[in-house]
Image 1: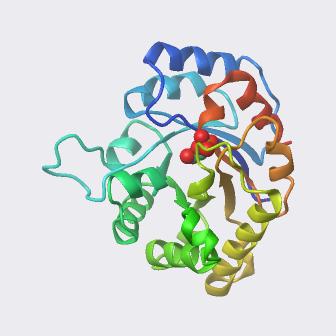
Image 2: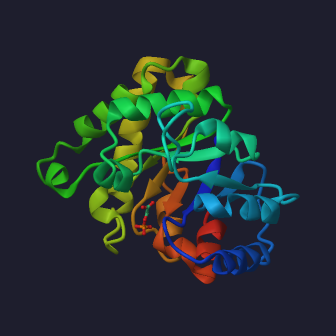
Length: 253
Ligand code: PGA
């Protein structure tokens, strides 16, 4: 069965001790999850070790880094490699978030190399894609997202593509309070799955979890997650609030 995932993206928020309290409170809710339901906390690099020890012994709860570099190692002061993330026992990495594409000029080609490094180090990438408002207004979102997927992912074989988690995050919905409707999300997720099916076949496409991101909150999560091709969410703002994120986790059920 395909995994259903609630992924928290803390971005560059919270002091260390605030992060500890937030994790303690969310984990303290003891929300029961089935085997195919999973919670991922994508936390800032300095908090990975702390977050990892908090979720140790908690089935279905895991930690992600928010980025890794597109080179394996070397003279890249201030950067963090996929191997470093793997070496501290963290198993997931968010790649290609629209904020990184916009502010750090990450291209589809750079992301292809990050994806390769993540996979060769045994990390599960949460690969983000999604269009800006102008593209949506021109009704070009399907071909835009398709190009993002093709240029960064289509060099992978079916064994590796099946390991990916995709997060569809329309840029106009991120941090704006303007969520895509459940129909808009379902339409795009179905399209994304069909793009994978055309290249890798239906069986492989059906294994890939496709998360929706963009102003997911405790109120809209259930309706979004109930769509047949929406396998959970990547959540920014609402993941910083105990009550909101707990509701989002519960919406997986
Ligand atoms: P948001 O962010 O939930 O605050 O809109 C989502 C994201 O950027 O991953």
